[in-house]
Length: 282
Ligand SMILES: Cc1cc2nc3c(=O)[nH]c(=O)nc-3n(C[C@H](O)[C@H](O)[C@H](O)COP(=O)(O)O)c2cc1C
Image (cartoon, rainbow, N blue to C red; front, side, top):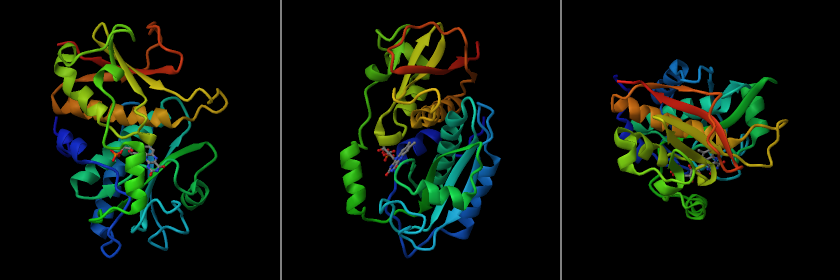
């Protein structure tokens, strides 16, 4: 399958950019490329995600504010989705694919789900009542030097580090770690999932391989209840699934994502089963 960018290379190249070149704003041509690509995106969860281009008046985003976290750009993209099953996972999947595409064009991005004025952005987009609005990203060209705030963020969140395989991937039960040798041809898709970005660098994805099927779980904040099921961890797992799927496609591995109703693996209580990857039998 022909992919739009070299997946492994872009996954390794991407990092959050919070400081942009103020004197060299993103070009009209690049904005157009991004929005054309965004409009054509679709995800394996079958949920339509909408992308919106927003331009603030002042480059330090005082009006559509980011609490001083993002510096030097006026342009943002926001994602909205109709509320429903796997909607947040779909946003994670599609938005991350857009971010990897942007990385390939030399455009900097940074997932923002917390440090932005959600109400101001939501009203600028015109988010509807039955829609979820989980995240935005600034777009522009990375400045040579990071702001102090950006350096502090990276240090505090340990943004250059990721959890080990043994903490994330399991075989048959949550008691047995999955090794790269066990994963075989799926070692690369799992490794690229492991490198994915997540809110506060939490890396809430956990995967169990059982009978040839990869079951995806999210470590979900237990304070969220049935009435408030919106959790950013579901977006994170969608981002991980995007890396996993694109890497699998790059390796010529096919299959499908499906939410199964008969997964009976005993899991720690903070983990919630979300969906599975069923490889196509050869
Ligand atoms: C869903 C999501 C939400 C995020 N929200 C914020 C945010 O509100 N503010 C921020 O500065 N960074 C945010 N980040 C960026 C993460 O802190 C960052 O991805 C992580 O520390 C790993 O660093 P890296 O992206 O450079 O690999 C978010 C990332 C994701 C995936």
